[in-house]
Image 1: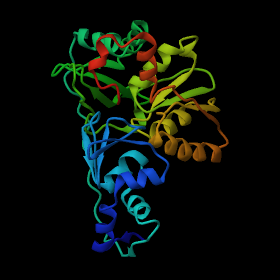
Image 2 (image 1 turned 120 degrees about the vertical axis):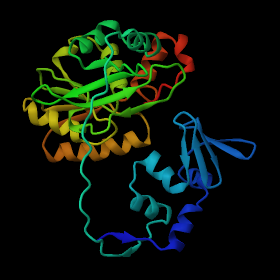
Image 3 (image 1 turned 45 degrees about the vertical axis):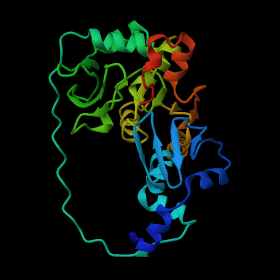
Image 4 (image 1 turned 180 degrees about the vertical axis):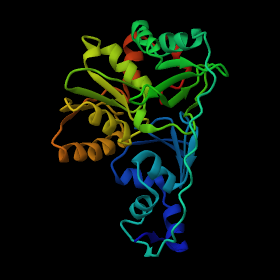
Length: 302
């Protein structure tokens, strides 16, 4: 039965001092005036019960903090902030589910110069890797704004998903096209028994660039975050896969995702292993290896 927290409980949760909470967890904070910066995510500023992550242009209070960095839902976030204190039970009235919005593909450009420039010059991804996915129409470019479009298709080769990323210097825009089906997220279907799992297309392409030997033999799939829809779909359609490599971000949300996904894979008797980037993600590793160049003015997180 769902839990409803009282106003008093929510007020206490929303007034937790985030710096004190992080220090209690053993996290390292650096103080600049009255503001603290979290060493693990050094673009994150903390002041009392407020926080702001400059690299993602997102912030809020303690509940949003737990949801963003610890991948918790609302109830688990409040319970954690209240040291495990439960809310009150209530009966939830049934609601008609809202219809899923229709997937509408934006108009695509015939010219992909900006996409190639962004992925090669900024993200340092190899041109031949990009070209492979362009040839399969899995990487395209929108006519409006010239965003790079990472596309996913169903078993009938019908496009069902599109993730957009801006190619404009300094822009942090990225989003899924409305109506996208996450089970068909950007991926490569191989022929052997291995699948490599990533949070984002940029990380997937970066890893392939770093580990190109026989890469087309393996399968690769993006989750579009940390949900399992796309992984479940590729396992269903490739019964020969018996080994999963979890290549998610090297951060707290990635740790929690590995624990949750790993438990599900173990239940299915599928072998799995985590592969960790040296930095936060695989693109940061690639950019560091090849030099920042022009890319130092861009936000490299997805």
